[in-house]
Length: 75
Image 1 (cartoon, one colour):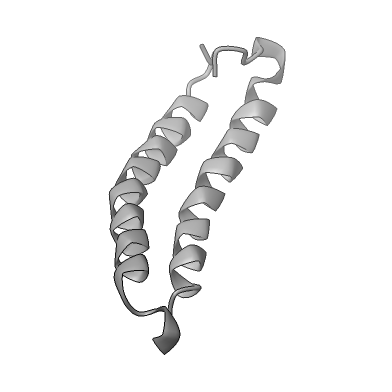
Image 2: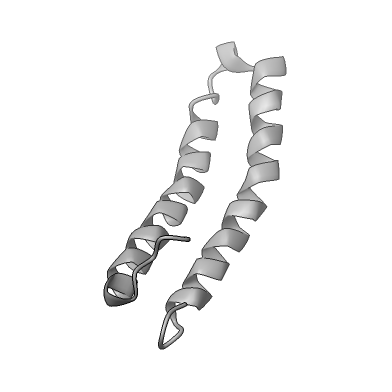
């Protein structure tokens, strides 16, 4: 975010929103990859715990980016 340019503010914020939103979606997709019986066990639990830790942080980041993108003048 340090290198955001005023002239391209809207485009760059849109790209950032897409990236952070995709990170949330990928967390669900990652968890789905551990849904089979063969994947039950400690690895699945470790991955699930990590996703549960990261998901709220990613959601907060998306909220921040969304609010920042609504500012008239950017940074």
